[in-house]
Image (cartoon, rainbow, N blue to C red):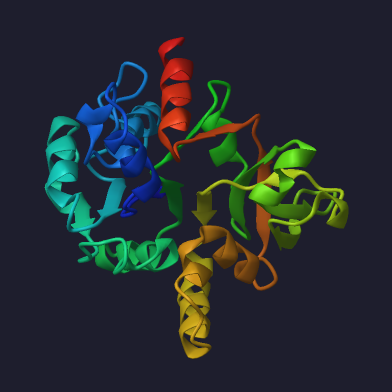
Length: 266
């Protein structure tokens, strides 16, 4: 059975800044993005838990969360409401945005801490949701035993420079990764959100990527973005893609308001 690792260790500085300036939403100040109430659910990631449980991925055995020291207690409280064992929640030990590990080190930290090295691990960004038509069953059925599997959706020309863009062969296997390219640099418009199903044999490459970054004294931004790990991985381990219609990403306050409106309509 696939194990799920939800990333909730970011500090959401832009959202917190927006909340501080908002009279209407000021009451959410200090709430981690992953735990924001959204669409008739107590938290954004509750949507994921319910979807996973409906497909046999259980809260009790298969779902884990990496957070930070500042948000740890909030995630513990949330976990207790959803039958997720409290030892499935771990803090990465950081307390500030300046000392954060970064998303990719948090992935590796969670995999090691929870002993998931021998499992296929689905990493989910805690600030991201998919549109209502996403079919998790089809996604899992497309996972093959010789490749990782990620999702991809089409973005308009004027958004290409905002995302990591992947190019694929006719079979949907990644052949190139372009970090926020100019639209003229590629015909592809495929963006790839943080919803990565890592084959168990690909996990050592995550460690290798982090080691390479540290050896070259790369800035934290080099391994804070999960797409850069994907760019390192695809030439070394096959990465297949699964098309989706779109994603909802909570960044600042307006994106949260839009996400909440979308999921309240369901």
